[in-house]
Amino acid sequence: MSTPQVEAFLEMMAVERDASPHTLSAYGRDLADAEAGIAGGLMRGDEVGVEAWFADLGRRGLSPATQARRRSAVRQFYRFALGEGWRADDPSRRLDAPKQGRSLPRTLDGEEIERLLKAAAQHDGAAGVRMVALVELAYASGLRVSELLGLKVEAVRRDPAFLIVRGKGGKERLAPLNASARAAVRTWLVARDAARPEKAPDSPWLFPSASANGHLTPRRFAQLLDQAAVDAGIDPARVSPHVLRHAFATHLLEGGADLRVVQTLLGHADIATTQIYTHVATDRLAQVVRDKHPLARDE
Image (cartoon, rainbow, N blue to C red; front, side, top):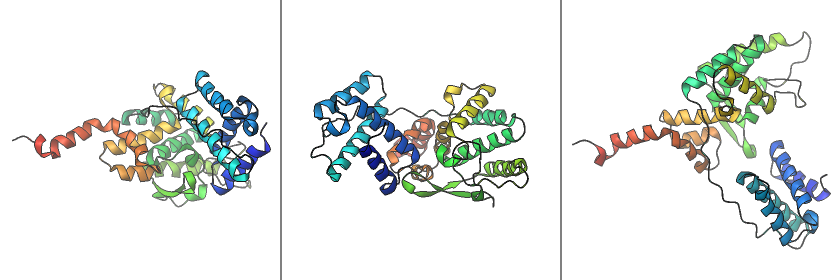
């Protein structure tokens, strides 16, 4: 159960820092773990207790990324507690970030994307049309899954070539839609509107569902992708909504797109995050060196 101090911290994160519901939920879980794991809890724990809790995360098998996020949540909480005058010290100040290598993103090649789309189209009726629109939109625009599933229907009614997307931190960016994605969306709008009961109010969401928030959930989309992957003869472990975003970035770089352009399209604050995608374009980059570097040219 969350403490009043944790509730106040999460409210501050939501109001002052515009943290997303996903971030707030993750921080809530992280702080609940710390409250249970630190001797005396968050408000009475000392440096020894905080460091012992943090050391135990690795022994419990949590990934370095999860450990890093929990460290961040606890350190931010204690800074907030200091500012509010709830504590006179910060027992998390000596926590060292866990060492973590940066894993290479999973991706799919162009032929696998085509197979995935064909498998999606094999679903009957509106379900198949919706699945094609989902995959086409994700692959054409590089949207995060929360951005994709949170699209409003009015954003696409006029068949735009770009979407205005509000991403992390409330920052807006343009997301492109190619001809194939636009055609898939138009087809889905026809099926979506036809499926709505007569006189029933229209949902504001492009991909409505009976879920609590009114639109398709990331979990359900992932399940549908798993089935499409199986139907396409692709290992479902290699396919997820985020993999489609990876494919978008990877294939742009393979095609010669500028890294800064890809950074902007993905909504990355730091170009180092975008650079991870260049590993898949080594053949193209090597060819650029052979063609353009003066010492690499034939006499």
